[in-house]
Image (tube, rainbow, N blue to C red; front, top):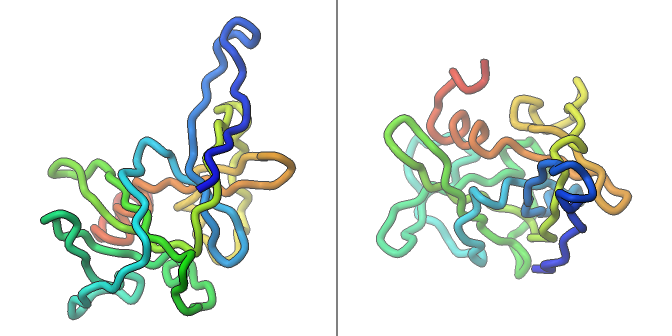
Length: 170
């Protein structure tokens, strides 16, 4: 993972503008980002244990140091073309709040890209038409080094896609 981060404004020079760090990753050639504070680890692709009657985007579960963690393939969830997993495919393990404490979930992505400091006031709202990504999962878009980074609302994504809580969509 390239740990290059864009320079955040200093409080003295910019009136203490708020920023957040985002881990970026690729899916089908597009760069997405998620709040780095939700990321617990990045794990190389490994097989999963299938669980009957799961939604198609939930590949199954992995045993992560004694914890059983569901694994979601974002390509399937976002209706992108499926490709074989390879050496760059990783599982990004995230923790999100849930009704009964925190929930740990792994999300399969094509490759990890970078870490960015994103100024809060630089996040633009998502347009109405986002193609294959449901707008409900998008926190906004940020211009980073001349490219648009789609910032995902990982809490909402996990809550609706894994926990089945449709209240998060409303």
